[in-house]
Length: 456
Image 1 (cartoon, rainbow, N blue to C red):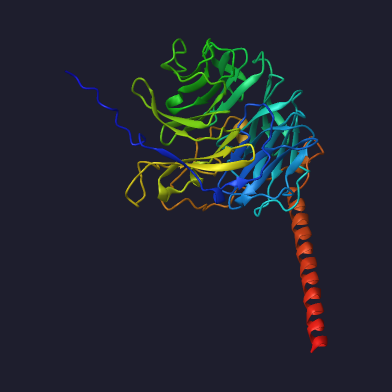
Image 2 (cartoon, rainbow, N blue to C red):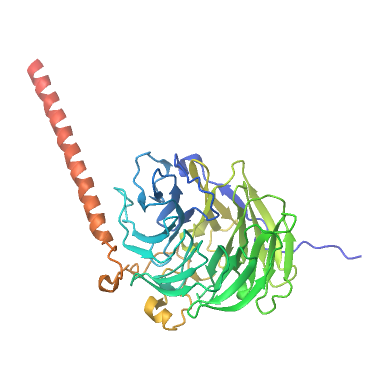
């Protein structure tokens, strides 16, 4: 008689824990837009969230340490004339953030180290090329200053941000709205999922289709697709009966999925977040109150259910911290920033371990912030494998942050403005305010001293 043995995995007991109330970001009016992007982006310095704005679109960028209640008058980034649909921090410079909006433009912003002191209205670069709203942004993982944007005009554009120009325009491939677009680990391929129920692998420099799969999921609701280990592809979508599904595909043989699992009958789109270091994929449904996680391995059924983090409040969006921003000494393998209607709540995913020593099996060398190619070289065909770093000593940047340079003479548009000038003018304003406050305090004290002297 054979007994069924439980599959061994060091991630079987991973548990999620929400931070205490004083570690959350409170009183933030999260955007009410019905768009299936994350609405939140995060790095080891800042957390960015799309917020409600009257007239135009705005998002808020807070230093990670600025927890608690956020004042209503806190400055925002508000240069778009239509609602903001997607934001993403640059992986090579923690102060640079890109935003895509309903006003058909993409804007690049530079956030001062200390955070915003006045609202930002002028971007460093404005990228114009889409004819309908821009709903998806994704920075190249290893090449510096390369940004992909996808719009509701069925067009994917690869921007050379330093030059402020569209380097590649993929406009004949997609026949309908693009639901998701992402890079593979070294940025040599793009994966898109479209409303025409087709998933496509593209060559980013040529703009040609390498392979495609029709109807990875039978349902008509949005499909999400991400690359996982060994070039395989994980998709989330819906069955014909509107049941949510997760599937794994091998691009070498798109005939049948390696596995297809049905999860539940909720209506929210499942946003997949894959960690290449551990092989764990987290599925966060928009409107759900839970995060499911699975381990992707080489053995059937390939996608193994691990566990689920549940809470009472539903999520309106989700930010995912890069590996170098995690607390290694607490065996944290992922951290999410969950958006509620009026707040942002960090959730740590932890592997329970008794030892205080560095856990090498949990933290193999991971992708660092140093790019391996410049934009011009990459567009000319240079390969850009990721540059890995060790997290053993708790990651500290040894190289100077990659400076964000815009070649003003090469910009085709005249809309580019110098971010640093704004930063310094903002600092000057805050210093002037401090001086004014000090003068008022000194006057008040002098007045009180005079009053006391006159009494005596």
